[in-house]
Length: 149
Length: 67
Image (cartoon, rainbow over all chains, first blue to last red; front, side):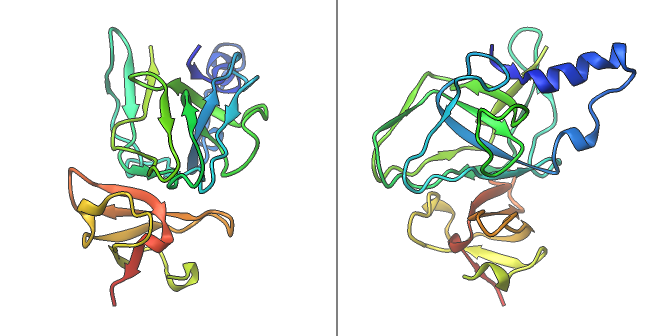
């Protein structure tokens, strides 16, 4: 299910058992955003596939109020934060590819299936998006939505 | 523009570079907030004093340093 990774979920749940809450160090000062062509089947990144179109690179996003908007009401009872800066994934030099989701990751290039690499992931609002050769690939401000309930 | 020509706090301007995805914002000036995180990272983060376009994470080549 889209949302927190298992690694981050366990850190939250451990506030009961271990008296600890996710620390600043659990979310790097800079995170990155990956585009997925296959979404994970398990929230540890299992089966996730990241796009590899020519020109693609994960854009960075700082883990401060420069990078993220303040939490706000989401759908239903959820709360959400969204990106405060526009993101450029790189103009496609190949394609087509179909993007199914995104993931907030800890690093620029660690494999998306590596345990703990994904912090959050989500599907795309409006459904899958096809990227054709020469298409610019960006995420507008507030396009990335991270939900908590 | 070479990455090592820049430092955090520098004033930069979005230029009409190859693959610049926001042509409507060419000429906008901002402040370098974060340089590329490694030699393999092509992007840097620049903040703008604009509530509708408050920042970007994009290629270093999309900026020129304002002297």
